[in-house]
Length: 399
Image 1 (cartoon, rainbow, N blue to C red):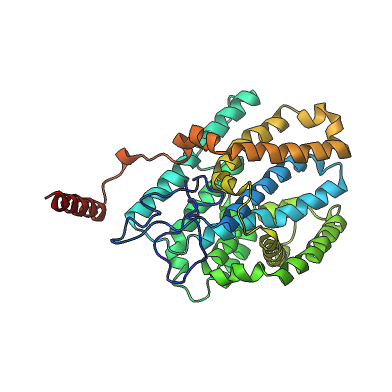
Image 2 (cartoon, helix red, strand yellow; image 1 turned 60 degrees about the vertical axis):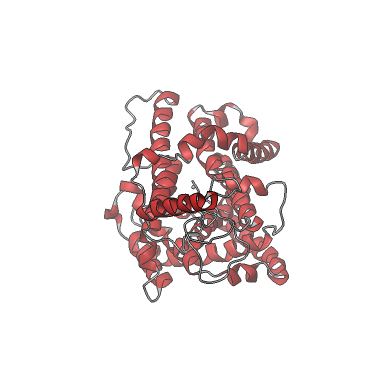
């Protein structure tokens, strides 16, 4: 969603040459070293390990699928094929983001520098974009009564709220005996609890929680496993079967199940349906997420650098996606509902999100996404001690 995927501290298990990604998925920070990522927080630490192209590639490809899904949404009422493709993509694109986010949260604790990054990289962008989206809605939809509420995330900002809450609960998940079954139980209970309400989009926070916890318990060898050649081959018929099932289910099943934002009762189904659907969708999402990771390139590509700017693309493309609905583009330009129009929308969405992930856009909007805000925080005593130690070392060297 600053650098929300950056691993905190030193990992006990050796990682693949993992990049220091950002404070969540998507992440904005370009591949570069910083005092926090280069290990400056520990005496004698060396340079930061180079970013792992695999994770940057995965984030970029997933954010492209997010943009495509938003472009396809208005087409699903007219095209069964678009609805099927939409359902398949929505089964795994956010779970993939969330799994990676959890994976890079494994070493998170309540250390002051990490809490500062959580505030500046997640909480502050949430406030900025929640206000910006609300003002945009007022202007674009001529709706001056639209409220600005930090308790009711609008459109894409729910992910930042969720990431903030998940990250804060990380130390708890590291001490429980069976974290994934517990997280699934919480998700099931949320699904059948209509009284949770809309504050902070807690339904989504709780229903997507198992994917974050899965990321916390994953090890590097699990990613190596899904990248084996036989898994890549097997993923092709799996995706084909998923598309076939989605095509069959499109007229029979509401796609709102994949948003995880409502309880079962609010969707008009008996409570036990939520239990079954939560477990079934979790299984399907994990299978398709593994298949997605299997096809992510491991080498550096032309789009690898864009994986470091996915937060920018994620939040900024929301203005275009919402504007297209408010201004009635899909109703005005009816040719968009024809096959060539659908292809055009797909290409346009991919091109737009790619442009919004580029370094120039990152530099332009870094003030909102990654503010330093040094004025807002006390200096960490350990950091001050390290600075004094370095200054004394320089003085001794000059003497």
